[in-house]
Length: 141
Image (tube, rainbow, N blue to C red):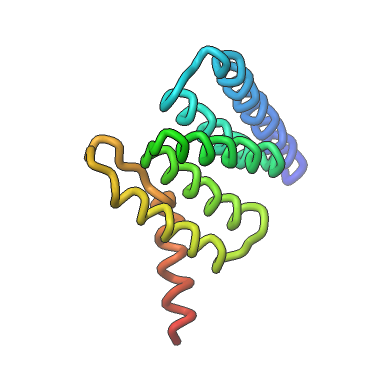
């Protein structure tokens, strides 16, 4: 029974990673035609996708480009998203809670500077927020 479960699990994982790779390929294909904030949003999304499939170098590469371009345009939401992606990478690749927490606070600071309420993002996923709360409470004991 365990053999079948393991086989099914790995088959699903391969299918999902393959689907994720198709999404990455599509974004990389349209990236040269994008400009300004659309380009930055795409770069941030590429960073997220590469983090999800555990490709650290690519995730860091796209997050860094997104942040640099967002700063040149003073695109607050783009800066917030790229810093948020960096926080996610600190947790995902390094398991470094303190670095993640510091970057997440910076991201939230950038999000708070936004003028438009329809551009709000979240520095962490809801489950990650709960984990951070638990980690913070454990550190305060």
